[in-house]
Amino acid sequence: MLKIVSIVLRVNDLPAQARFWKTALDYVERDPAEDDWVILKPRDAETPCIALDAHHSERVLPPRIHLDIYAEDQAAEVRRLTELGAREVHWDGRPADADYVIMEDPEGNRFCIVDRPDWAGWDDGR
Image (cartoon, rainbow, N blue to C red; front, side):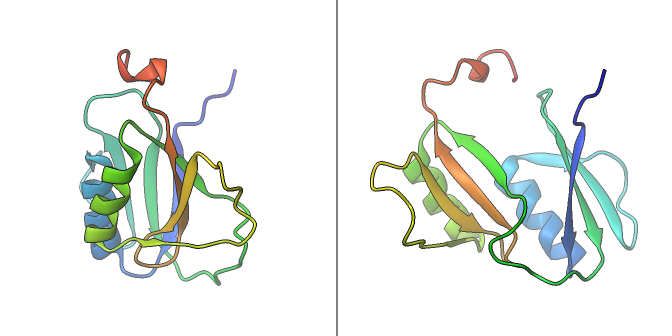
């Protein structure tokens, strides 16, 4: 059996990116950060960790992989993340009825905020 436990993002500024993702997701450090590596875990849920690897990587668009992050209140979360330094990404191919907003963190790692106010996992930690 396999289980995704951690998703690794390459970053340039580890302390700044750790602050962003900890605040964005309400995650905490699993172990003390190293100079080039930190694993952030959910404060109180059984969802995957985010590991930040301070290793320069060329940005490719469109990215081969991105995060889908579910939100109970999508508009409020997009505003909050923008205040933290994220940016909304406009894409001409996005359907008018899309349930997601494309964003990128302060270093350009892309993620989507998906409107899921009725997701059953909110109550059981999934």
